[in-house]
Image 1 (cartoon, rainbow, N blue to C red):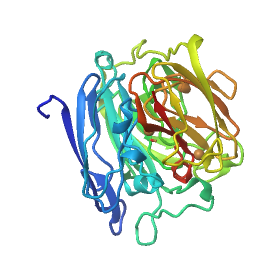
Image 2: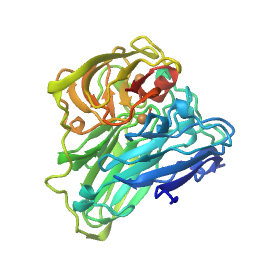
Image 3: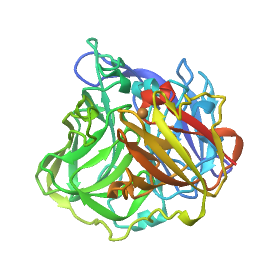
Length: 429
Ligand code: C2O
Ligand code: CU
Ligand code: CU
């Protein structure tokens, strides 16, 4: 902690070597280690400060994905940290408990830097969520799962070459959970909460268990849902998170898998979308503690006032651009008035998978392809899938931080698309 009372996190971005499989170690990057970074945790109302030191020999950044914060602290392409420099953002956490994450966001190089290994979870806590009887013992019945894919070349190094279908970037054939190939988890409680993050650059996951058992979705990007939704499949596009609670029987073994995605069209049949993959094996002990539950009432439903829409905007995602404009560092696309409600229509105009992420905000999904959103898109979100041909409507309110000079980003979170220009910038005034 520093004298002003802020909680201080020291983060060292560094290069190293990591051994994932048999054979030689692989060149990797990490935060306070050689691959990925520590889970950061802060409470609503807490002032937090960082010393982010870049120990690499090229510039990078750390962006706090899903966090409401001043634009100058956001860690996007306007806050790159030069080699050897230290960046010291600071803000007060002011949003409900949620599973957020952090990752690099340097201009044009987000995919490459993420694939080297820079990423971590960022969990926000609050009194309300801790007062619930949900599983919440970190690493025991509350488990972060950063799900990523990688390819290895003949020398066992990361292979960043795009696949045959290069329009998406790297699709790996090895799945990693928290940086581990072939992961398992020893279950000691009947209910386990999994905080799932699609931390891949391009791959979409369609999670489910090998025996098709039901599980409960309890939280989306921005925090807890009003009530749990029971399902046996859950699809997450790059950057999205979900918290699920699953029940285990004593002594059983079951696998969390990713099934072929449900996005239709040609894309749905390609690598990265049609694959069936093992994600993680769960091995339950012979006797399981049973002292948590899924409460009937959890978080707050999105409740933006749609009677008072200040502005409507439309965004068409196509060929390396949004509305025909590729990302340019000097161009700010528009200004939003603080604390007003806007409705944004987002359109996938070509045959590829896209999604849509907005910095500094958790938004409400109003419509997906002309329909009421499905249950897993009814909570607060910062990233929404946009499958080919889809037209979705979002309501957003930027509630607090203004800055006429420093923009926030909106973009496709398929990182090769972002890097190639499917991104724009806005300021909050
Ligand atoms: Cu997850 Cu603009 O980022
Ligand atoms: Cu973000
Ligand atoms: Cu895209």
